[in-house]
Length: 430
Image (cartoon, rainbow, N blue to C red):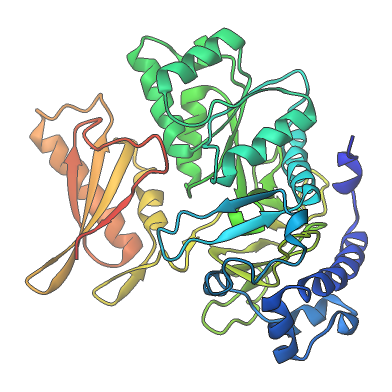
């Protein structure tokens, strides 16, 4: 089996030496594709010119638009006969894009995820229920093969069918889950409706959250509801999927698998590196991808490096919790903000329930934001004075965070629709 311990015990010097060697190999592989053959020639860079990590900045940036323009084969760096799988984006923000994998790509992907699972104590004795969607979405399959690689009894439950999910957890004694944050809360609510307490009636002791952004307060609510520790996992289809970076037991930053990826934090406007510790756009370069290597891919995800060493001893650099996406940024009357800012405020207010929605409208030529908020079940809607105090508090804390006033609409529990897939948090009616 793959030596997980050795990969996560590399020193900084060893990691960076390995990155330089693999970057040179990656540039040579990328040059076999039609897109990078042209892009590297225009930049005047070749594999032979790579002698240090500083040379990374000489390489061209790659965007989602580049992937769309190169469809279907322009980024393929190996013969089609060596490709054993493709994943295909939904295309909700534009033309769908394909990502290709060789057998070796799939093996390394599983290893990256398995290292993160192992780091928080998952072993072959665990029963792992994978509650993420399978198919063209990468979340399910990435964790599935990692679970099998570790030797877990792996249940490909996929998403949805909540009653069956809970039944399987009870029957087979599931100890580890992989789940969307919003769905984790939904499952806990379903259990309570059925007279079950996940902390008492289920055996889940660890979980992995991914697929949608969430705040620390929301993670703590999930942990409280399940009586288990939940760890953040980051990935994107263009980089294979989940496993690019994962938390360790400390739950304080996601360790990048730096032997497989080089991470940069750039100012999204100037495309220059930000000062150490400051937020910017995460840019990733694959180091071991065969079928479709990507150079300096702009993820649009906003984060920062955590400069201090992790107490766990792993020397791979850590990313802070993601604060949003540069392309998720909303503009209201000239003010920029991210939906995650709203969630951070709401989840810090004890009276607020688990579901909320941002509704943007235009009234008399002015943009308006209404934040719909469900309250916890113990707060009665008959006490109008108390409701008004809660509403005013929420509105004031949101104003302090966003620097503009919003409307707050209080709703009874379970009023907003619940999705068994990614939660819909923003409805723009402008």
